[in-house]
Length: 313
Image (tube, rainbow, N blue to C red; front, side, top):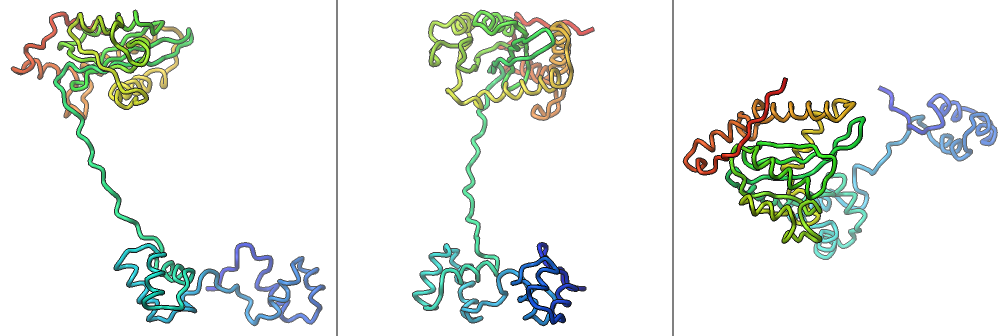
């Protein structure tokens, strides 16, 4: 099989052979083949028409086989950096060693880079809570009529979800949503986690005196907020926001708010009462709630104000 010529070669083996056999001057040959005169001289002085092998030589010119074997063994055994290997070998075994020749030697043997063992960080287990710990967040949805604000609440443990569309995202809307959510959840809500938005807290996360926190206290709910600039703390509801958008506005076009609201409610009903979830080991969120409320631990947390959603026609 003939050797391949260089990708950027200006001459072919036939042209090179013709240059070698020709008795014309270098300038004439360079003009005829439209190449540099240095290229003509190079092929005139060669006996072959094949390109020479590129890259580093496979055998070291500055190290003997024994010295090269010793350097490779030292690197593999100690796993030191190339600089540390160079200083040690030069001082103890190979006085004429240069850093560049040592690097080329290691590169030929594929040990110029030695991956250091990565420190495995221990993953912290997600703290478990009994049902009643609810994550709340706000996102936006758009139809042809304009923008709507979607308030989303999801239970950390049961994954039971409640949503509501509003035309604004004020503190009054947040309070209204909280009250409706409290009545809609089958089990009592004991804790609520929100971000530090103006709908939930005052300036710099100050919850005291805010209407949302006051409503939480009236309902017997502990209001917690995420750390500033740490949205992943509320990742449970952030992921639910994405799921809702993927099932609605990212897949369908809505001409009015009513169509969106109808489709959204149908999706949430199907999610809560019919969608098996892998994280719940193949049962839907409402089944998880029922199993909890039937247990001795969950019986005191049955919500007497629970309102079952209307069927979708």
